[in-house]
Amino acid sequence: MKYNIWFPFTQMKTAREPLLIERAKDCTLYGKEGKTYIDAISSWWVNIHGHANEKISASIAEQAEKLEQVIFAGFTHEPAETLAEKLLQIAPGNFSKVFYSDDGSTSVEVAVKMALQFWHNQGATRKTMILAFEDGYHGDTFGAMSVGAPSVFNSAFSKHLFPVHHIPVPSADNLAHIFETIRTLNIMGEIAAFIFEPLVQGAGGMKMHQPEDLKKLLQFVREEGIICIADEVMTGFGRTGRNFAMEWTGVQPDIICLSKGITGGFLPLGVTLCTQAVFDAFYSDDKYKTLYHGHSYTANPLACAAANSSLDILLSEGCRQSIQRICTRHKEFGKSLGSSYIEPIKDLRQRGTILAIEFQNGKDSSYFDPLRDRLYDFFLENGVLLRPLGNTVYIMPPYCIRDEELEKVYEVITEAIEKIIL
Ligand SMILES: Cc1ncc(COP(=O)(O)O)c(C=O)c1O
Image (cartoon, helix red, strand yellow):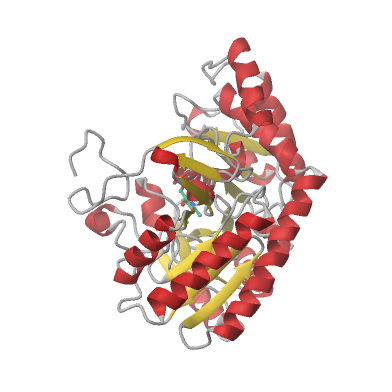
């Protein structure tokens, strides 16, 4: 491919020319020569209210006329203050501080730094180990790669990543064993933090675990004196049918990472929320106890204005109803698919607005499964953007998706089973 741009997650030698999108509205992407695509994955899980939402774009335009950017150390601004207040109101638990950054990966970097320095500031120098889930994904920067599971995404850097202990996601069968592993690892109180994607592991293959199992694990982890970091970069803002996945567990994490849907897909923004107890370990006359982290565009006013507007939409009755409608429709479709195609489907799972269908007959159940490219091409040829993870096809639509559009997505998946899988 001859191109000036080096695209992300793309082998430039073998990839096809990217599709040029000229504009987008709601769930539709408009390409060249009248070609349209239903964006059934909310463009990498960010456009929760679809594309070109008028309310969000108006709030960005209004903000751009007033204040587009200002250094966020020694200065503040109204959109960031308002957003912090709103986030603290709806966050799953009793958080007291909001730290801004740029995207999901940086919200994770901040969380990991907060947790490690929390112990360092208190002189607990032995508390340095981090626990994370197998198959977890937390982003592309070095700290985020370290806490993610070893994978094709980070294998070239394995020698440069800090050591992390990975545990399986909890189930009724393995909880006792996981407790034993953690107890042994933490015998001298070495574990500083546990980072996890609650209920749905996105990039790892839309793998899901149950709230009651996660609840038991988190209760145990907290009893062990370990800081809990919930990475809700993907699951946040309504994805799982509630505002945040942690609401299903009823457990309060110490730190939570948010990004992706926060601005409704208009602008990049990351936030890391923490409890008063975490913050207190940094609150000091000693300058060495400061959290020395920040980015040039931290709390960009346009991104904060977009997020304020996106949150208003998310909390509206209409949006809540749409989320519930998608949950119900997915359930019905999943049920009919599961009973019609017992052989080729290995697993069918749903959490809220996310429906994942894992197929049996991939030659290789990894990210490189050749079935993946055939399915991806078939979906696009039929006007639907779905981006399978190996042999797992998932739907994660914008909440404004209409019933007819959902129906078309379901139809295309059924057709793919008939024409490609069977
Ligand atoms: C759970 C989770 N955390 C962090 C990230 C990284 O976010 P970003 O790509 O915005 O850096 C992702 C991205 O997919 C994610 O799914």
